[in-house]
Length: 383
Image 1: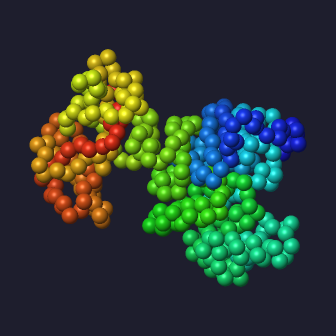
Image 2: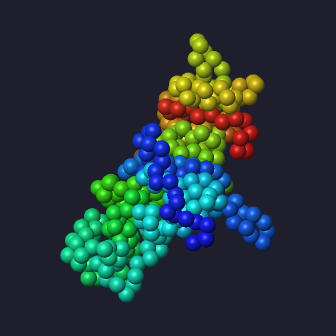
């Protein structure tokens, strides 16, 4: 711990003028001095979580998400900004509460179970202040919560990866932390297990009524587990929102590219009967919501030109449509095909079509556009 870090002099609470979030991060900066100069890892990171909410920092390697998690845990000291847990300030640019005094539980990427201890002893590791009887009861309660009752005498090497993850979760939850932090919790598991275990983990956290923050590079894990997701890039959050809005209403081209699949077609904004529409090769599309109208108006060029985002599920296979597109690629996904289609202009787009519609490469099929939101971006943005 740095000599100038004095936990006992931190302000006790945030101002009580509004309901206090369980976790609040304000304008967090972290940098390191390297032989090549200063390396900025976090650049004004800000977000908050309500009590019982599950949040996720989502991004590719090097975006700063793990550093953010370690800063919340107290393993990294920010160079500027503030972290508040339960309304209590635990970190600012001058002082930092030690990790063990923050009321935070951590599930590490490699689970960090003690191989020489049985599962009961692993789960009881942070319960030294309880009596033996209280420890036994709490261990049994936590193993029951994570779906592993009556295996406390087994050792970590006797478990599958998914079971080890559950034991690590039980150990982190046993001391009843205010916040649970999870570092890439599914990275060591087989891909076909990840989404199912993410849903199981969400159920466990909701039953425990605990606020949690995880970091991952996998959007499917983030969407299955989190209530709020922050897409990170270059040490800051591009958009902090619900999974639904990140997918259907991305605020930046970078978010649109990172979250889900999509295609971009050129369009032009115009007004019909007093209401804005955007014309693309598939026809004219009404811009229904005020948020979408405002975004389109600010993004359009002087001539009204924009880029229009089309998700694969926005493109509907319709044999009666006059618009035909050529199948140039197909990927079987069980319940559906992901088709890459070429329009008459030569532009390509993606379409998710039920798998009983099995079309051949080179075949031309009818399509139409159907979506609740028309999402636009400025011409040249992200090109």
